[in-house]
Image 1 (cartoon, rainbow, N blue to C red):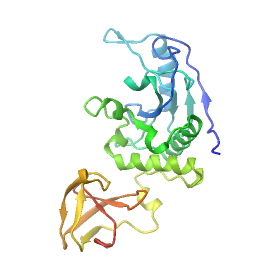
Image 2: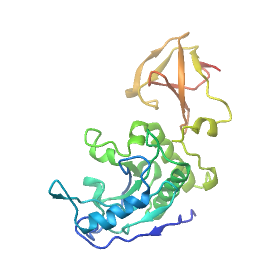
Image 3: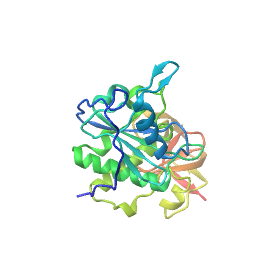
Image 4: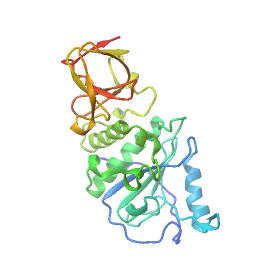
Length: 266
């Protein structure tokens, strides 16, 4: 049984702008980001609880916004609203999704090691507590509203294989396959160096014709073309999957790491 993470309660008062008191029937957990890198989570808490909750207007219109949880850059988890009540964060999913606002860092809005560990711990524990599936019931805000409306959380939306790895980490922690000490931040710029016992190859050479893909999966719909025997590609990242891993290529496409099809060049 996974233990509950340490949570600091910063309860928002009942108000029509962020905590209406409407009942929530939890079916999903939605991950958000605060919209700007390197903004401390406690500032987001203060914004929701002390600004929006008191009636805050932008261009003459009241802002309706809140979140159940906020995770800070140092990994601190704040809870603002009980998970039995709705918040205003995930548009049409407000009625069924727990919302988690997560602080980000760097130009690409990735997560600190402390933040990532808290994300995994909180989501895994919530899935255990609410009877949810980590691999199917953890979603992004963009999954609900679409990319044309908002990229949120921007790092995970732009790097979907990292979102997949995050959900796998949550699943593995919930099921006891890993411990809190084993969690590795897959969004860190040092992820490959930290998580692999072997260095990332600079290039790969195709030795047997194989498909390259638009997304890091083996679905037929992801096929972008065929890499021919003898072709050489530059490798920029490793995508860790539950089955066969994939390399992300400089072109932005993905290809299998299966040694039947490729040779690695270091």
